Length: 196
Image (tube, rainbow, N blue to C red; front, top):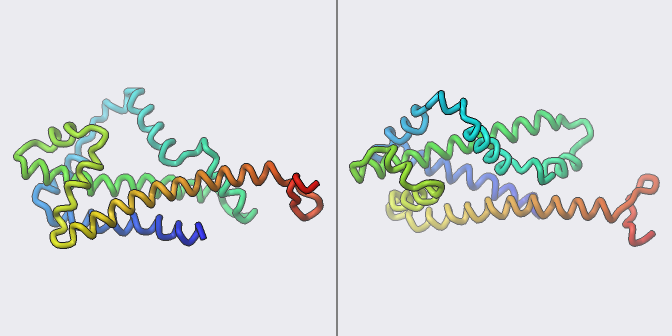
């Protein structure tokens, strides 16, 4: 059952984010300025700061959760000949690409807000801090016209399903650990230890 639910909770965010990018990047005034700020503002000297690398590492570790053991638990259910290295690279790359893709939607909206308020994109982007994505996405819902309420419900349902999706993975990891601790193998069959 969780596998079927996961198909929806994984595909729905991709579809909704694509709709949001199309609606904001191509149809809002000032969106191009926001995207140029997002992609074009690159300060090479920042790569020499350890704090930047620490923040990047903590974000990717938080995003992929390698220390929690979910990937290891899922790989234990795969076929023995499965190329787990290739799969892990695909997961990491797709995760990062989705984050970059989402950034286009966010900064399109930031560019539009800056255009609407007559401010610089950098000023609007820095004023919101870490909550930038949530503020801009909530702001963007009004740009869907008559469908604003439907899109709002869909988008915030998507956020809920993303949280549930992470929870499914964590819970399944804990269940897998408990299951491994409570079973032992005799011959070709696994026997719960409480039955021994």
